[in-house]
Amino acid sequence: MDARMEPNPLRSKASFFPGIRLAGKFPTFTFAVVLLLANSALALDTAKANMQLTSTAFKEGEPIPARYTRDGKDVSPPLKWSGAPANTKSFALIADDPDAPAGTWVHWVVYDLPPATTELAEDTPKSQNLPGGAKQGLNDSRRLGYGGPGPPPGKPHRYFFKLYALDKPLDLNPGATKKDVERAMETHILGQTQLMGTYQRR
Image (cartoon, rainbow, N blue to C red):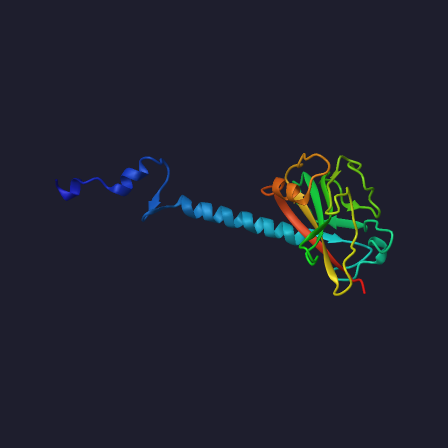
């Protein structure tokens, strides 16, 4: 066969994808996909950067007052947040201590907080349901709601309050665990932020 009459393999492939112009061996839409993924990652990073979680009880990296621990009233600290993405459909909050002797200890699990929520007041009730439809899960003491710090004497422990903006309610029953919540929200996080406080028993 005349070489000039041999079918162009790239042209043959292109016929299966109308409207796609091939450049070398790679279709131009590949670059569009890469660009889209990069923009999506940038949007998530921006959402994470814009979200802020604060407390009037303690600032980032500072000691948590005894009132909010097992050495005091063991009530939850006041928390307030801002900067959530506009399309947020619910929030979830997880508080844990990665410095616990037996591994990370979970102190609080809250989920399905309504999208208009911007704070949790001090001494949030330790009940299955909260006003607005939010639910509370089990901490690692196997109790509903907040359970404050109570580390063994020694070095200070760090306590991370992690807030997640989600694109849907999780619709889990009350009493879910941290693992349940993390699994349910795995592909639904629009943004996140955290506040870390410390506590030390001498």
